Image (cartoon, rainbow, N blue to C red; front, side, top):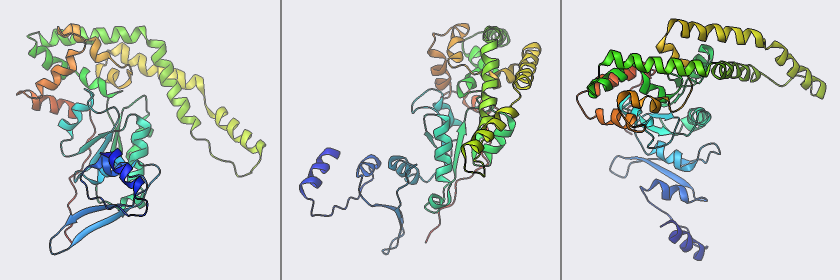
Length: 323
């Protein structure tokens, strides 16, 4: 379809083409076109339309997907169809969930859609949801001010490791829930201990990178001023203090066997697959089973458990104004 119309336009350079379409991909494929969004039609030739100004930070396809849906939007990390992303619609059922690949893209798109110029085009609520990824409480609070929320676990895959989720699956598998959970807990703590130095240094590295981002341009426009400003930032970073405080924090978690807080700091993909054998499942079967259980009478119990580890967005769908 796209190539056909490309050729027709190529052979008719002296004509203006007007397309009326519900195909968002086709609309996005018209690169040099003026895009007009028909928001609503109220009868008696009354229309609510807006001309969409191009934005270099927002792909047309994403702009159309957001504007073409009347639900509030939640940008999340990951890819469409992934097992982890399939959990979000159950918890945030009133949102249009749009995966944006990685954390930086979620942040960029959330801020772009909430800037004043783009916000004037729509009356939708646009929020972002990102993994915890060693973030400090100060960073989490700062992101929240920009409508970007953070999971209460290190990464979305850790939602599959929540204690009550594991116990529900154990029941489903005719296993003793407490005994099964204790096996999973012991497995994860043992694995964390084997990766202790890696995890500790990853936490420290994340904190150091965060502090380096505090660099700002000096008032004087000289090489010496740039160098002095950079050196000031470097000198302010107390690496032994960061290391010792981080070590103290994770040592406390390990010593007390604090499982919930382990899930907040243990950043290792595929952990949910590695525990599958404890639940008498093949490696890829565990997340599939959770999603199948969402179609059973256990659905509400699973959703309520997930909500305890996911942020409350405090959002109702916006009302649509009738002109």
